[in-house]
Length: 432
Picture (cartoon, rainbow, N blue to C red):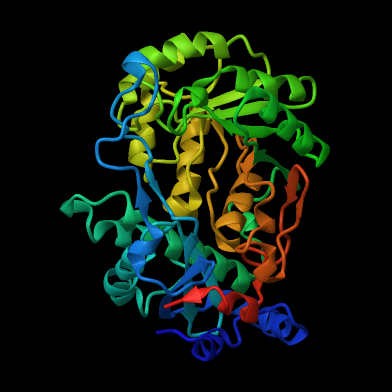
């Protein structure tokens, strides 16, 4: 079990925020022409609150046979996103060390079962990656993907573990070169990325008040749920109208339904949503496997359709694009990695599809990877999680924070991903 003392030994020397750290960094910058051999790969589970309880304490789900709670045919078996974290937040940090002493941090999205992703990292990827040159980012991606490609794995825990390693490698090469990751990706199109923040509320009047409060805090672009959860009230389109009226002329409301509809239901609801002029997109409307229905819905609606957080590789996105099944894609960097997300974004641009990375609960490598990708991608429009820096995994555990502001985030200019962990604060969230 990784206790606080051993954790601090593990990360000793990793922080580069001090003057001494920067001296080492610039000394290493001219060594980028030499191999950066991988000497270790470690995975650290973060939990908030950091309680040591049995693992099944952190997973909850609706009862077997639970229904959606709607009226008539809308009261069907609940099959969309019913697993929850029991009130806890979890993520998996990936630390990659090289023989030049340069350390990179990555992150794998693992809110439910981080030990599964950790096992993939330590038992599958670590043995084949030790000794390789961290600069060989794309060849390493292909090597990891090939380990199980012919065994039927191309998504889920497998690619989330890949994403953690991949993000860390970009961080390493940026630190070694003395350059921010966006420069390695080809340069930046903008200095600041717009962000949106989620707005909650039950009845329309509550949504209206919450949207107004967020607007006054500096968020003209907000996202809300529709048909996420049980009961008839969650499908009330008037909730969307209420938020849209608050933001009219100032920004847009984005809507997320997390597979809450069938095609027929979405078509009926979509006619109403099309009447809302400042509705930016309708996200994850249908089951993720239903590419054909997504294509039909996109053809029927004026409101842009957004999809992508459930997909894990460019091959899935290729099928989505070829069907013209969406207008905006939101791949998740902590589930896909920087290398593959960049490929997906470029492919989307060829279809004139916009790019807006998804960001769920996570820490600095997760957020920073999406920021750098947005900066270096011409079809990027906005980034999720405008107030994510306030959470336990946010700037509270950073010595050098990510430069968030209300409604936007500046692109980090420091080498690598551009942040530094506060090892003492971070260690308090690490669980064995």
